[in-house]
Length: 187
Image 1: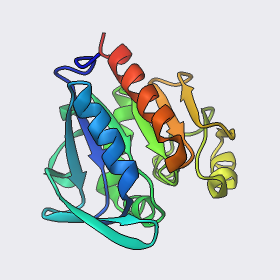
Image 2: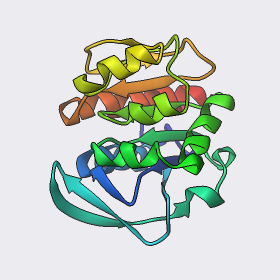
Image 3: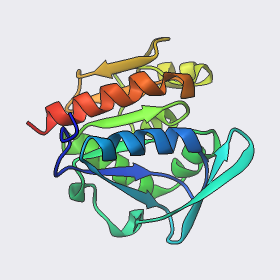
Image 4: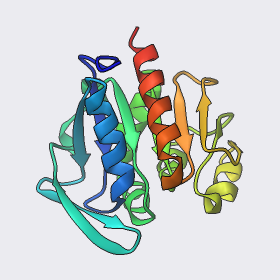
């Protein structure tokens, strides 16, 4: 079980600030434990500022700048939530292009909490079933997606696998599903 993602490079796309720390760190540790290599991709070099809800938490070093690295360099993508994080990402053309690349290339993507905002901006939720923080329900529906209130949803209806969850309480199911689906996609 410790080598399910051996040899896989997993991008974690995060804005310079606003990411919900636990939605970054728990999937990151799950990827490492499964033998994958996580990489923190952001809009600029340096450090990103994580948050515990509205309170500043830890800082993490950026591995790659989104404008300088193609999605083709990675096997899968994780989009952590927080309110400000995806709101900042969806306003950045390079970030949206990076996300779109995973769908074009048929690679798995996992998004939690408010992160589906970036999927909406990338135009990839139409005819897909997903979940999110409840306040995104109307946004997802208006973008042509089917919203459901479940702790984790795995949708294989498109060119790739899309894994989504609602909130930090769903992290155990989210991490289990993303490891399972990322490993299955690499077989």
